[in-house]
Length: 387
Image 1: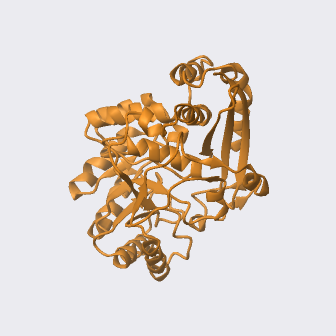
Image 2: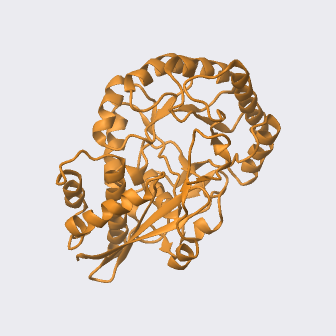
Image 3: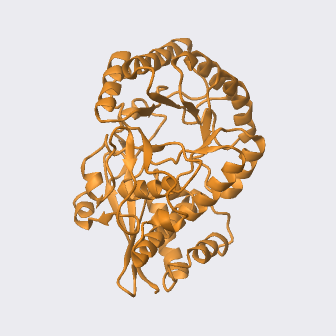
């Protein structure tokens, strides 16, 4: 079996463009990959335009390790977010093809299920005014949708530090969410790498009474010793530190593990070279007693890929999910992803990823010219700024 054609397809929404690839073979089987590329869709499409004829066409989709290693090494330049995203798009589609060829779900090809369902948490649910009343009401709606865990960034457009008045506002928002969901629901605090270590520790201490299940990216990801400095003060509060959505290769995780600077890692399968690369990372993390909570801000095919990883990963913790709080047609672009019921996904069904691409939906919602800026006022309402 050989890969004969690769077709990129881009689905537009109000704040993100979701890039799919359809990978076809000479035996008639087709696989799907997908990623949400933050503000760099054209760059990834440009990379694929060069890499697909060079490496992908004519390759055997079952020889996914060989294909990934060639794409990673043979361009010589260091692989970062864009290259690892392009690799992941192809790699995930290859697993979809393999599963279809063998009539097995992907997780069975990666070691088999170690759980019968996958715990989920909601994100993207708080597109309201930054007041305690509105965050309280929005959190209640998350529970009504069946979730038992949720994540949010209460920090507005903050960078580096917080004024006292803004700090009090943040504390009020977090207290309102905890009051809305009660003591038995996990709340996770997203910090988006906004702060220096001292400021991060100071605000986490004040949020500690609300018992967050973790704090995420308290400092920017490029300085892991700064993360270690923050983590050394945060974890004695009984609050885990999570990080990893902006680490894109195994090599970038080496120092993180050696420093023991995080309790939970959050690789994004779609920006981390795909499923096998993420599976290797999870095994490495297990040796450090670190849990895995995959980052996932994509559409249905990336969610399916993350669920397959979750199904077969012993040290998995919980899965992020946006698509109950965004445009309904995003789910329709590739059907087959299980719904969240009582806080959990069931395992994906059917061979491969278990999703069916709907190209008509993608054509009806073309790519948008948007710039999603996490440091703009009211970014959390997820209505991207046109550019």
